[in-house]
Image 1 (cartoon, one colour):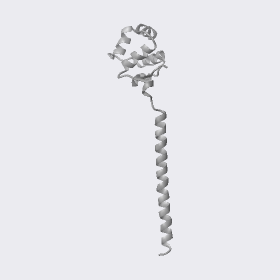
Image 2 (cartoon, rainbow, N blue to C red; image 1 turned 135 degrees about the horizontal axis):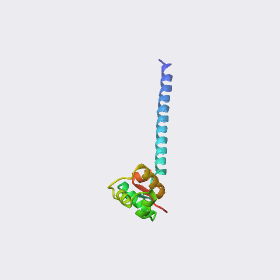
Image 3 (spheres, one colour; image 1 turned 90 degrees about the horizontal axis):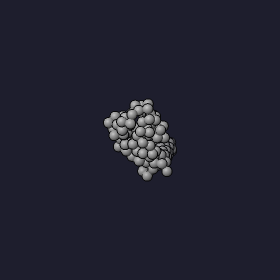
Image 4 (cartoon, rainbow, N blue to C red; image 1 turned 60 degrees about the vertical axis):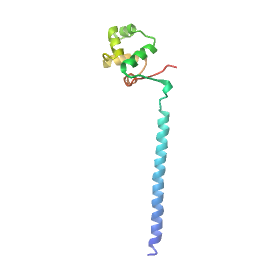
Length: 120
C-alpha cells in the first residue's frame, strides 16, 4: 500500500500537467484567432455597404465617374440594360458581371456581396 501512494502522487501531477497544457493550448488558440480576426476586420469607414447588386453596380459606376451610356458601350449592351441592372429589375450575366468588375476595378465578389472599398 505504501508503494501505491507515490504512484498516485505522480499520476495526479501528470493529470494536472496534462490539463494545464490543454488549457494553455486553448488560450493560445483563442488569442491567435482573435488577433487574426482583428487583422482581417473590415473598417466601416473604408467600406460602403449596399443592399443589392444593383446599388453596388450604380455606386461603383458613380465612383468611377462613368455614365450608363459609357458602361453600355464598353460592354456592348444597351443603356436600358445597364439601368435595369442598377435598379434591380434584372441582373447582368456572369460574363457581363466580370466585365463590369474589370471596368470598375473591383472584384465581382465584392459587387455580389454588396460592398465596395472607398477610393482614398
